[in-house]
Length: 92
Image 1 (cartoon, rainbow, N blue to C red):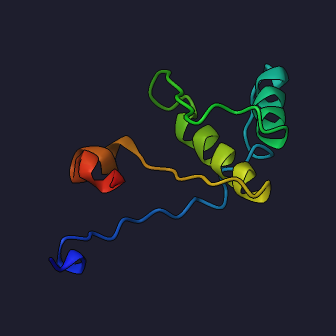
Image 2: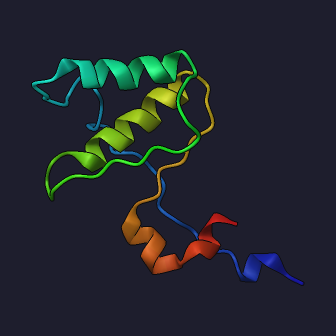
């Protein structure tokens, strides 16, 4: 079976502007909790954020991924749009 014919390329790059430093939050403890969890390797295998539209979920998730990469952790950011477009098979 030729696997290359079934593989799809996904745009998995992170937006360079989505960092903890560029995120405004009145509750600084939230950002500190996320940053410390990654640095101390206490982060759960998955991170799920929810909130209203335009509340910064994408920004925070990409900041988490960027921080995890800096701390040499394996990470992937996959948007819900990509999941819906490619289906769960894109995780194989």
